[in-house]
Length: 188
Ligand SMILES: Nc1ncnc2c1ncn2[C@@H]1O[C@H](COP(=O)(O)OP(=O)(O)OP(=O)(O)O)[C@@H](O)[C@H]1O
Ligand SMILES: O=C(O)C1=C[C@@H](O)[C@@H](O)[C@H](O)C1
Ligand SMILES: [Mg+2]
Image (cartoon, rainbow, N blue to C red; front, side):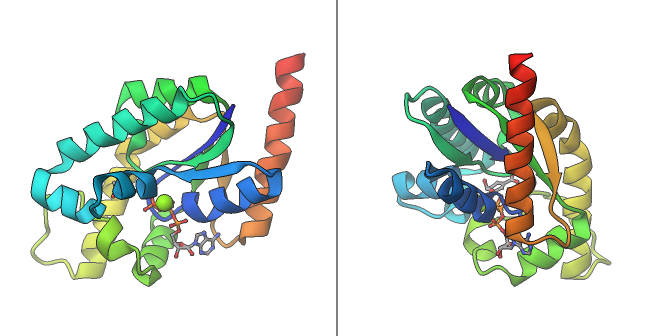
């Protein structure tokens, strides 16, 4: 069984996934990190050299492999994993799927402060607004993509957890409570 974390960039999938795995005494795999290790390149390099479709195929191959492995672990995914129906189905079939939510403002604040942003989070929207400052452009990208992706996160998730203005401990505690509720429901 895998417990997968999905959600937009900066919602805390990597941070929360590692802590959740520790609390559950399970292994932890971060799909973005494993993909970069295997490719021997940063995600931003893959986007710049080969383009987003090549990255999406590498991501889909990895998700397929991980979802079908026999091991149990916590799996943190890349923010765009829900774009492909085969990824959504693979994650659902592997076990509970937790959707970490945050508002666009929270996401932008976290991404600006995070040093991983430069190499792991290339811009996703080609459309740039000439009158926008870099901050406004980032908020525009996050707001636009989040609105587009929300139905897919919703469809894939077993449940969601809000992360705005909450620390790791509170978020992990809510995930653990909801995992117990899910197990009780499945036995009814
Ligand atoms: N609950 C939280 N409160 C404050 N900051 C947080 C919280 N969760 C994560 N962060 C911070 O936000 C940044 C992004 O977190 P993280 O890398 O875990 O997100 P992610 O969902 O894995 O992003 P990506 O999809 O790009 O991999 C990090 O700097 C992290 O320390
Ligand atoms: O939201 C996205 O589409 C992405 C999020 C990151 O986790 C990486 O998987 C990559 O930068 C793409
Ligand atoms: Mg991550």
